[in-house]
Each structure stands twice: as C-alpha cells, then as structure tokens.
Image 1 (cartoon, rainbow, N blue to C red):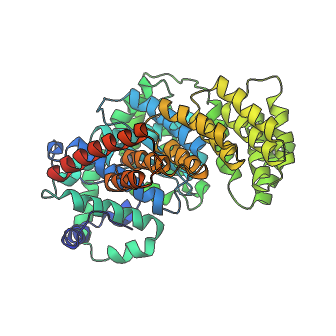
Image 2 (tube, rainbow, N blue to C red; image 1 turned 30 degrees about the horizontal axis):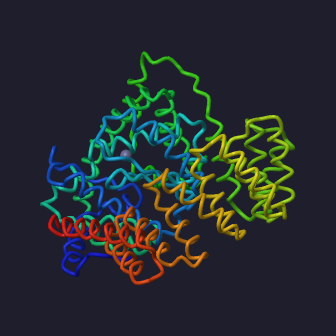
Length: 487
Ligand SMILES: [Zn+2]
C-alpha cells in the first residue's frame, strides 16, 4: 500500500510495534486495541484521529479489493449508522460508514469514526435491529475512543506509526498469509494480556451500544439474540463467522451481561425498513454468476418463500441487469412500480434499464421525476449525472452537476463527476478546479494544490475564474503550512 508521508524510520518503529502486538491474526479485521490504562485520549487529538482515518479511507478506496463502491448500499449504511450516532454521546467527530463485499460476518471501527461493514454481516442478520445492534457496538468503540485510548498508552506511539499499523492490519485483510508471516514472532503471553484488555473494551462497547440501540428506537433484544446465535450455531454460517468471533471475543459472561440488561425491556416489534430489504436483495443479487443470481430469485418467487415480494423482485431485476437483459429488468421493475411511490433504489434501476434498452428520453424523465420526489437521494443524483454524461447530454450534465455541487459542497464524488463533464466539454481549467475540490475534501492537499496550479496554467479562463482559482490556492497553501506545523 502507498504511504504518502511515511519515511523508513517510522516504518521500522511500526514493525517493532507489530512485533510485540500479535493481535494481528485476531485483529485482521476488527481493529481492536488493548487498553493499557485509561483516559489517555488527550494525547491523540481528535483532528489527528480524523486525519488518520481519512488517510486510511483513501487507501481503502484506492487499493482494497473488497471495498464496495456502491452509493446505494453506502447511503443506506450511513442512514442507519447516523441514526445510531445521533443517539450516542456526541464527539463531534462525524461518522462515515462504508460497505465491503466480503462474505465474512464482520464490522470494524477505524480511527476517526470510519466504520466498515461486510456484506456477509448484512446478509447474516435476521432483522434490521440485529444489524443496528452490531453497528451500535462499533459506534461505541468510536465514541469511547477505544482505539486512541488503547494505542496511545503504548509508549506515545507516533501518528505515522499508528497509520502504518492500521494499514498493515488492512493489508492483512486481503492477504492473510502475509499477515500470518508478519505476526509469527508474537509471544503468547502478550496475546493473553491484550485480549484480556480487549474484553474490557468489548464490555464497554456492549453497554454503551445497548443504550444507543434503545435510544435510537430499535429492539434491544436483538443484540444478545444475534451474538448468542452466532456463538451457538457457527455452522449455520459455515466458515463465515470465525473471524468475527476472534475479533470480538465472545464468552458466556458477555452474552449473559447483555441478557441481564434486557431485563425489564419488553420485546419490541420494530419492522424492517424497505431500504434494509432492498439492500439485502441487492447484495444477494451480486453473489455468484449473473445466471445463478437470476435462478436464485426466480426460485424464491416461485416457492413464495419470501418475506418481502417487492424486495425479492428488485433482487431479480438487479440480477437481470447483471446479465445485461435490460428488457427483463425493466419488466420486472414495472411490476412493482405500479401505482406506488417507488423508492429511489427501484427508480434508479428502472431508469437505467429504460436507457440501456434504448429509451433515453423515457429513462431521463424517470430520473427527473424521481429526483423531484427524492431530491436528497444522493445515489440518484450521481446516477442521473452519470447518465447525462454517458449519453453525451453535456450541457444538461454541466447545469445539473453545477447545481448539485452547490447543494452538496462536501461531496468529493460529485466534484469528480463535474470534472469529467468539464473535461468532456473541453473546459480544462474548470476540470482541474473541480478535481482540486475533490482532492481537498479527501484530505489530499498537495494533490489539490497541484490541480489548481494546472488550472492556472491551462489558459482560456475568464477573469472571474482566474481570481477564484487564485483565492482557493492561497487558502489551500495556508492550510498545508498549518498542517506541516502541527506535524
Ligand atoms: Zn468490538
């Protein structure tokens, strides 16, 4: 993995840390670190933690093969996750949830409020409250600053080595043999001590997570139900559960603690949201070959074994779209759209299927109608911008993306789409300017400055654009100097 600002000595330091910390196998996914004391979090400032999280997130987007670049699944996770975050002690750190296409049942918290959620977990839970229970646990690791508290106690580790450690752990995710070799020197005694401390953090995350779950309005009994089922019947999940059980040391005591907490909380029927059902169908439809996925959903529908027919049909349409059978996907979706205010996920796929089978005007009209009803559905915004761009409606794309960027000024993906549109229209200066904004939002200031300098050199800019570029360049350079001073 790339390391933008790491030099060799830092890597050496981190190698030593990894040498004594044999958590790696246990920790390949859930980055749980031991507590060697408490309230040391002041040493690692929130800004530093956020910065590290952002760096790791950039690496994941660029390098992690299981990273699932799917705005709809991501939007759902953020909607659910932020509902839980809003019910947690507020750190002002901001959360970001992202999906991974990985059959292992897992979720993991990283520095700075970045939380990864495996598709294997989303498909293994029996209801939305169970998924919320696992996420509430991870959110609590963040709000309790377990990463910072654990790691800072380990002899004032430098920021750079923290980053190195986190990236090494991530690297281990995709190649467990490498991880195994790197961790071979670890001592058994250290593991025991560290796992013991980790159990303290686990207990705290369970306790705070329970309060969060209750406050957010989910069924609090789902937490122990999921964990107990996971522990009792690992074979139900074949080989997908062990990682989770290794990274979240589960024992009888933890589960009975959860059950004790539930005393006095009557069973609460919390219906699953339609988005939860649709996201699960979407993830399921991405599994196996397209033909296998189509067959799977057709069987479910034929046997009438499905809890939510609309979600199952949506899954069938996703599988048909994977087969590039756009007409079939359109027909399947038309069946569930009838007379209903269909949700954004269904509208997006329907509009795309219409366009792909040759009805551009009809598809774009579906998009516009859906955007009128759901102006904040960000995946719909991306998809409409992409459809305009792909189909060479460049003027429309420019107007739409300029508006969307003004409305969502912290959205790097939108700036990148805007940059692509500018490039297609031959507006090189504006293209670099838009890219600069995207990079700045990702915390990549040097790259942002480089883009602004390219924008200045590209010529053809009017006076207004040039002054805007100059002002932004001054701002970014000041910020870069500040960051250099802090480091
Ligand atoms: Zn945990």
